[in-house]
Length: 518
Image (tube, rainbow, N blue to C red; front, side, top):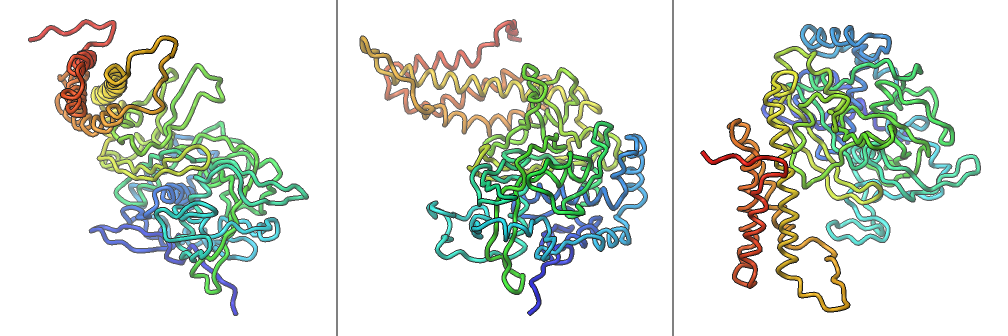
């Protein structure tokens, strides 16, 4: 019987969307050959789509020769413009030559795609297919929302197993995994993945071809002068105990920073995965600034710790990150737009005007807990950037800042009002204890405020002369009244305390002079 095989460059494991909402499943090779026809990826798992976009962008750099580190930024940008305006597609012969050169078989005995075959000998225990698939309960965890159990693990289709493998490589958890023995050393602790708990912002063109070329991060002179390889291009399997090669541009930057090792165990026909090994790949740090993340900058910290990727938050609306994408920033800025966005001004004008942003986030803690993943899509926002329309860009930043300030103030005054009304008088000799969780008013007010604040935000952009702080304060007062209305009749002091809270929301910030009414 033939050994199982699953050629990821040919098997249909990547859902894509064509015009008129038509969807089809393609292999890696066909995705690149038809990228000029495809509108967007259609993977149902946003973190897998975030990883796949990075992988496809790395392949796009290879087949277009936009991966030459000796090329100046000017020459590189000019070549990219020519590819977008003159060629209009990836050259088929080059695409075929690239995929023929490397191994893309998910179950290859010596070099399985994005896997380490040595785990079968180095790990005594398998992790189980439920550990591989995000959302399934595994180990002693209770099956609250899933029919799967570790007593009867069900195989997963190979295409879906590949999606989840990508998530482990990019968003994998830290902590205890399967014990891996290398040169007599037994190690079970793994570091978190390079994108764990982050939110990615990807330029989205009219076709996948435009998306991949627009997403390419520019060359820079500070990258190490070392051979650049994607994992499937490496001439040898990496030594888990050795110091990894330096992060280079663009292959290792986009695809080669995983800290987890995976080995899928297939069914005899290769159509399903029945088990898996999951463990650590390296104990070393692989520092690099991912080109699709917003970085918050704290100049009070040491240089190595100043730039922190913005965390994914399923409760945070996308419009609250718009100013971080639109403002160019400087050396004193407290936020830095994604590096991939710094060269978008060099794109052809007709593409730049239509450019949207695809957002993929995975709300996780820094170690093991996964909350939820999400995706979003902006309208064409590039005409609003600081380089093209500084007035609109600054207006967006001002409105977002005022919305955040009023939102924070609403939480504080609702919390203070709740405590004033519900806290009994202090007993002599017994200090009052602070509450262990947020009051109901605060949680309800926060949940109600931000959707209404978004409506106010877009209205403020349409009316640039309107006072942003006053508009958000008015909405916050209305929210506070809505969530506290039952308390007015239940508590003796509620009306007076809530009136003071509303006055605090309307009060101008300290150091400003209130406007005189017209």
